[in-house]
Length: 116
Image (cartoon, rainbow, N blue to C red; front, side, top):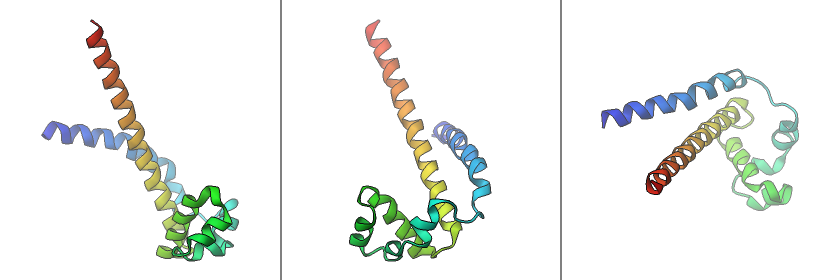
């Protein structure tokens, strides 16, 4: 069990440390480019409980705007929360890619053993 924990911590550090290094300078930055129209000036993200307004604003990006509305509900226009959420999404995606790679490599190894 200790080996699993050690391996997990090693793999977690491979995902978390580079992501933290890349995003560390963004936590205190301001809104940029499409953030102004998508968050600051977008009244539909002001109410997370009004999915119709989010859908009407941009139907193909409903989930994106729902998460922006959730961010707005939790922290208003404090940019830090938006960047932390973005950081968490990238960490989660890093773990998903790592898991997919592990499963793919294990499957490939199993296929090699079966073919011999």
